[in-house]
Structure formats: structure tokens, C-alpha cells
Amino acid sequence: MKNIIIIGTGAVAAELTSYIEDNNARLDLDNRINILGYIDYDYNIEKYWRKYNLKAPVLCDIDSYSPSVNEEVLIGISDIQFRNSIIDKLIKKNASFASFIHSSVIVPQFAQIGIGNIIYPFCIIGPNTVIGNFNMITSYSFISHDCSIGNGNFFSTAGIAGRVNIGNNNFLGIRSTIIPHVTIGNNNVIQAGMVVDKSIKDKIYIEI
Image 1 (tube, rainbow, N blue to C red):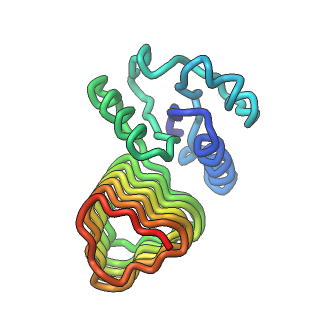
Image 2 (cartoon, rainbow, N blue to C red):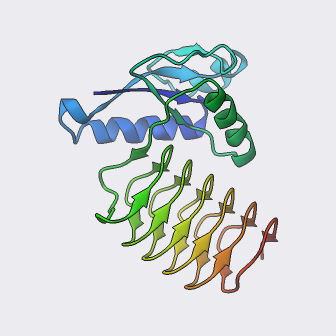
């Protein structure tokens, strides 16, 4: 059994908790995740932790957290900039980062997936795809064959066609779609429902 601490107590942390619990019910004891608790600031306990009725306790805040042996962290935060700041703090503390991939996700044998990734249920990863670190991929997203994905991206039920290259820290809104052979740079925002049929560079905001 793997011991995990979830960073955050908000909606994403609550969703992540529910998917871990669902996944545990499908696995034998050795492969389950044991949620030790959450890391968040005191002012979020009433606002979030109690609201979502999270069972495990809030252990401390990020500033006072000291990593221990035999535990790993999962980042339950969707805001890319804030999440990156938390990751930087955890790296300086020499924390160990876990990934969570729900058992319903289709991952081919030769896909490459880095550390700290979270992939919600019913996603599909294509063959010969490379995914970097700390990406969050929500339910029913697909990343097709021969794609290259960087670090810190957020895919919200997004569809990525084959041979697409995506850089770092991009936000892809609900049902956004990238057609084949397109390259997406870094720090872009692609809002819900958009179809991107041309390559874009950095810091572009795409909406209807």
C-alpha cells in the first residue's frame, strides 16, 4: 500500500480523493493508496475540508511540512501558477511526488509518463505518446498517438489528436480540441469548446 498526502483541500482535492477511493475498491490491498491526510492552511479547513467531508485530517500547512520516508505527495490544485509555486516549495523540501492514474485509463505499453501526473477516470492515452511531469488530465480526455506533452498542463475533458506537440503550463478548457500536427507553445489558455487548427506560440488566450 502506498502512503499519500494530498496537497490542498478544495474541489480538485475532493475529486481526487473520490477517484482514489473508487480505484482502491478495484485493487488488491498491496496496490491501494492510503491517504494519510491533507496539507493546507488553517483558513481553508472550514471553507473546504469540512465542506467536502474529507475523512483524513489536515496535517499541516505547506510551509511547515517536512517530508517523511515512505510517503509521497499528490498535488490536488488546478490553478497552474499556484500549483507550480507549491511544486517548487516541495522540490526544495525534497518531497517525493506520486502519480495517480485511475485503473479505467487506457495506457499503452510504450507510452512514457513522468512524475506527479494525475489522470482521472476514462481517459485514453495513445501509443508512442510522451507525457512530462505534473500534468492534470480530467475524465474523458484523450491524447492520441505520437503526441509530446510537456509539464504542468491542465486538460479539462480535452481532445488531443495525433502527432500534436504541447509545451508547458497550458490550460485547455472543457471539450477543447487540438487537430493533428499542431504545435502549442507555453502558458496558453484555450477556452472551452475551442478547436485549434493552427500552431500557436506562447501566452496566447483563445476564446470564442
